[in-house]
Image 1 (cartoon, helix red, strand yellow):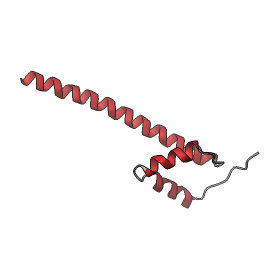
Image 2 (tube, helix red, strand yellow; image 1 turned 135 degrees about the vertical axis):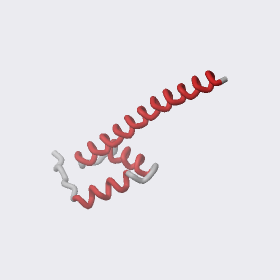
Image 3 (cartoon, rainbow, N blue to C red; image 1 turned 180 degrees about the horizontal axis):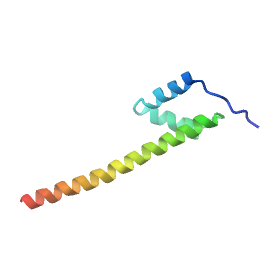
Image 4 (cartoon, helix red, strand yellow; image 1 turned 90 degrees about the horizontal axis):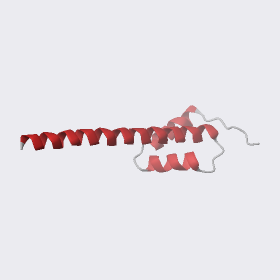
Length: 79
């Protein structure tokens, strides 16, 4: 049975800082979320952050699809 390790606020600040670095952050979230880490809280946090990123990307694509469609219709109407 593995022992649940506790993270200090300084470690959490470091994790959040690293996850905010472009590209490196996504890679580290994947490593922390799906790697062989015994730290359950960090693993769940990383998976939650990846889920949030995925939802933001989906909403962005939907928004750009509708915005782009409106721009195309407007340009077709103007001639």
